[in-house]
Length: 198
Image (cartoon, rainbow, N blue to C red; front, top):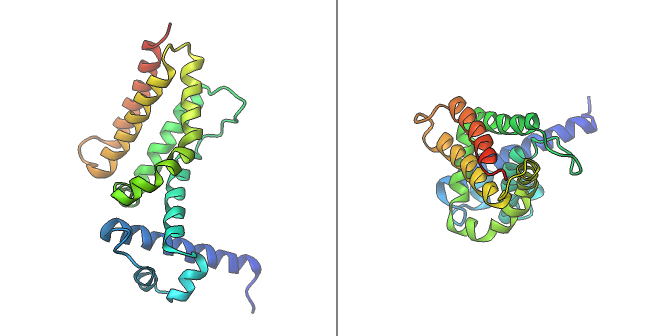
């Protein structure tokens, strides 16, 4: 029985995901420059030609991996651009972000290892800023709506606190339990916002 269009699409999605997972591991372990498309294809169990059917270049593959990582975190908010962020929505966003990181520590450890490589940092800072903009806008909007006198400064502190907690979660998961960090970060956000009121 011939496969349906949906089955072909499912196979394509699974193959693409496999290539990205293998590439992430090789990029993080061996370095982006030291990893070839041939190595990625071999470890993914496909031909090099087939790998190029999914990604035109190693650089395109890298961009998709980075975008996927950013989107997995920043897409959690359901807040529309023209609405104020409620306390409940902010808490839900932070909780779901921590839960996503906690469900696949290995993936995020590889992702952060990749992002810390000099070539990646130099070339994708702008891409990170664009991808994270909705997240920053959401937090900024919330801080400003509470009458905070320094929303930009407190946005910086809150962002560093969240990112730092994620790094602890993936680099040294035994030091602070994830659930405890999640609660403390949420409490910290509200303390910072309260302290900065007029």
